Image 1: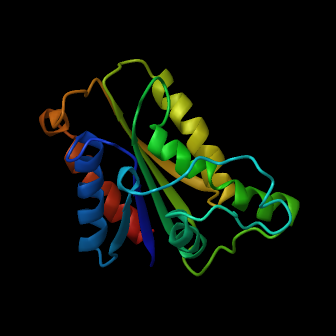
Image 2 (image 1 turned 120 degrees about the vertical axis):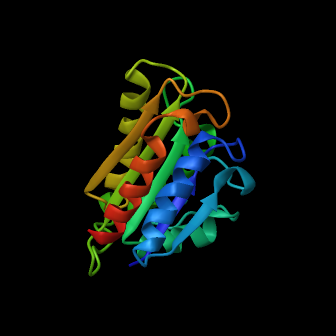
Length: 190
């Protein structure tokens, strides 16, 4: 089973990364290694809405998204992890999502959705933020739902934690890291 993960936080060793590391550990212990993209370290230009992918389903921008497209196309499980910034995904995560416009063109204009593969395609959205209002999760999940649907992932699970802001504060949450680990195991099993 091929699992890929997108770490969308700019903060190294922050709450998002700590949660994602536990998910990866859980999946790995079930025999599924995870290829992780640290989006903040990548050169990903924002979508230019240039129409370059309308006829082909292939983005014409050349940057670090090149190998990402291939991995999205062939993955069985896709994890998107992001802090909640101003009720939504981080800029790093949103740039990735927006650059998947080429998959939207391929699926809806060219009528060539990504094939499901032998394990099916499932997603996991991981959100963590300092606010205590659910709207941050709802808004972030709305963007992620559109992303997952566009890349032919018909179902995704949301793992979210609110009221967690300071770097490393997720370690003080009574269940978060254990939940993340178990979620990783379940994702690799299903």
